[in-house]
Length: 102
Image 1 (cartoon, rainbow, N blue to C red):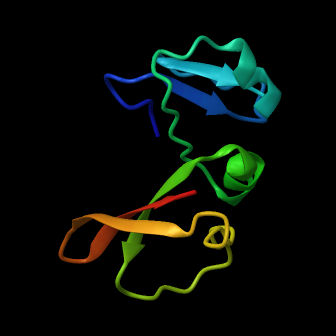
Image 2 (image 1 turned 60 degrees about the vertical axis):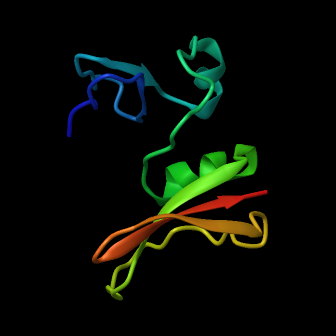
């Protein structure tokens, strides 16, 4: 993939040689504190390990809840007990966007 346009893209990667135009690269979660954030909101887009790394620092989670079930070998970490407040932000034909907050 490539960085999304018109936003600050910070990529956490183990690959020391990875780079992309429009992205700031960090190699550990601790490196994030050294980056000047353009906006106070940070969106974590990752795989399961990245979500696990930041889960304790989150105040809310936006989840695309897909109406169908799919098989897979990786699942999003359990979070519902920490984020008991839920609201549907928007509904689509095949999924809905839900906001979970503390």
